[in-house]
Image (cartoon, rainbow, N blue to C red; front, side):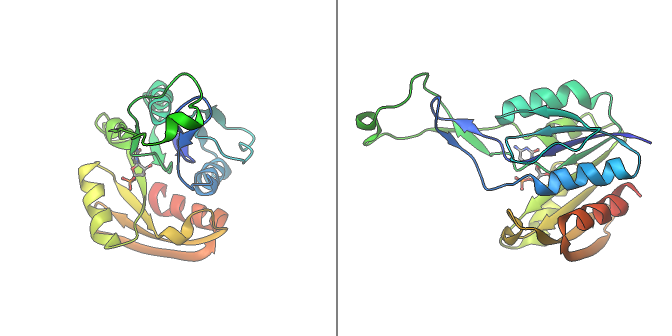
Length: 205
Ligand code: C5P
C-alpha cells in the first residue's frame, strides 16, 4: 500500500467575483484514477478543481479553485506521498488582475484582459521527486507523441498518458501511455473507469 496524490478537474481563474477563465475538464478521468488506486488498496489524497462529481468514499478530498490554490494544497501533502498522478487540466494562464467588484457592462467595452502564467504544478512537485513515481496526463490535438515525450522530459515525468481533445467530458476514451524508459502502451477505447484501472496497472504495477 502506498500513499498517492492525485490532481483532477479544471482550475478556475477569477476575472472578478463572478466571472472566470477555465476549461472543459469534467474531472472524470482524475476521479476514476483515484477510485482505481483505492480499489488496489492504496491511500489517496485527491486535490480537485470544481467538478460536479462526488469524491470517492475513503479519499482525503481537497476542493480548490485556482492553480495557485491547487499547488498550495499539493505541496502540503506531497512530502508524505509516494506517487503523484497529475490528471488536472490546470489553466496555463490566469488574469493578471482579478478585480474585487463585479465588472459593469459599460466597463467591458474595449477592455483588454492581461494574462500571466500559472505555476506548473507537476513540474514544481517533480523537482523534489527523490525517486517517487510521477505520472502526467497530456491532451494534444497535433503531433501528440512527440510533444508528450518532450513534456515527459522537461517535467521529469516517469510516464505520460496521452489522449486527444475528444476525451474532454466523454464517458469513453483511449490513452497512449509513454514511459521515460521508451515504453509505449495503447489502452482503450473503453469507459474511463476501466481505462483508469489499466493506467494504474501500467504505471504503478
Ligand atoms: O497542460 P499540459 O499539457 O502541459 O499538461 C501536462 C501535465 O502537466 C498534466 O499532467 C497536467 O496535470 C500537468 N500540469 C500541471 N500544472 C500546469 C500545467 C500542467 O500540473 N500548470
